[in-house]
Length: 315
Image: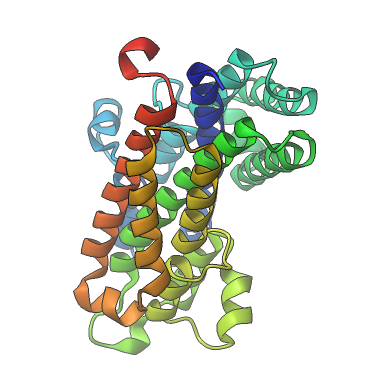
């Protein structure tokens, strides 16, 4: 496969996954803002979204204060914010258009109609119709795109690059959410201070609330949330599940120069496969997740160098 084609497919899937992940995070944060809480706690949750996406400087150039309305406007519909849902859907469509002959008609029509509908929605229209309805729409359009891809695309190299992009983006997002939210919600001293609704919101942001209940059948605890989102290999948004998929898809597209990238992916997979949650927490969850995110970045960089368009050429 041409490296330029692989590049567009890889980033098309990353942007779709990114839009969905952002919709999930904004949705649960919005819902939790409706629960009685202090102003400081509310602002902390909205601040976390900006920090999660490393957008502090970009946000500060437009807004002097962090409020629910400002963050939602910035992260939902701001065309100048490269990480907004609006920008992600536009970039996914642009990448799909560049490889129109590689994706199926159903895939193209799904991505194109998603963008055409999204660009007609102003932030005021979204608010008036219900911000929660918009987030559900984004999640459903992402799920539809994923389903159409699985149901219509030949499972050749194109399919494997799409899966790689999806799984890398999902792993990075799950790690970021857990890193930011864990320390906000971790009880200090009094174990009874744990807010059930906040932990439930965290689990819902990665579609894991019902899964948690099925697996543990008990109260929500920080340790078990960490175990579920990092180590369970049967949880579709866990780090272990995502890296399983990355290793498998890398093996299927391997070439003469991808050995080191495959080795790095294999080492990360082995670490997740044999890790214990108590060891991760004893080492320090933040430190462990920071290392994981660094390695995910290096994996993405390795994939780009081994298979995709070199940065100089892409520019």
